[in-house]
Image 1 (cartoon, rainbow, N blue to C red):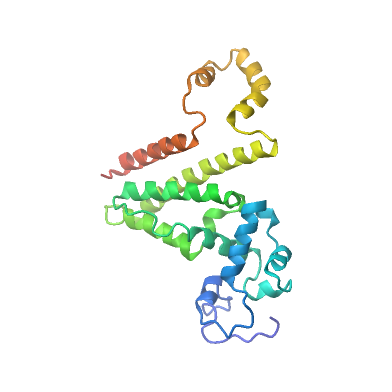
Image 2 (image 1 turned 120 degrees about the horizontal axis):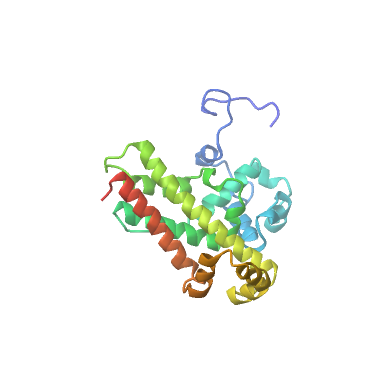
Amino acid sequence: MAGRQKKDGDGDGDGAEPSLWERLDRPAPAARTSLTPQKIAEVAVAIADAEGFAAVTMRRLAKELDVAPMAAYRHVSGKDDLWALMVDRIFAELGAASKATGWREVLRAEALNVRELMLRHPWMGELPAPLFVLTPNRMATAERQFAALDGRGLDVDTMMVALRTVNAYVYGTTRSEVALQSYMKQRGWDGPDQTRTALAPQMNYLMETGRYPAYRRYIHEASHKDDPSWEFELGLDCVLDGIEARLGLA
């Protein structure tokens, strides 16, 4: 707002505006409207779930919330704040997702739960940088992971590498899974069998060249090709096995 005077407690002393979460932690002024950041996040997530991330605009939000187009800007300053509210809203679904206590069991449980979260909200994979959207509920997930590794003889840099390695596997693998589902849906392919039928001419030609004998064996012998959960969990266990062996964790 033009002419805004800086008050004690604003920002961090260097003139920077307070973050979204700092603003939300402050006592709320007397309500002039039923619109809240939580309501904005709820509606934005519902739109994204139904129509994709690109459908979430301030104009669309205003229509769904039945408010003036500029009303949402009292709570969010732009798309970065909106993304953060949406991510925080869906990560609230995880809560303290697992009662596991061992480092491996905690990291595995969190990984499985984040995969399920991304499958429920596939637009999450469309965010420009989902791993760097900092929100209280995302930090709570990271805190559970860090706490599981803390006190096991690792320095903090090594713990961060372990967490980033697991998270990179989870996000990368699940984004590929979501992308395949979207690709199939766009083309009207109802399941793996229709997808294979549609791609058969290309695949048959490539296999008949004789250049890919190992892959040909996979095509004929694989028994889990239509089981992405099994594939995900085996890959996750391989990542955790590597962390355990490399870092000497028991």
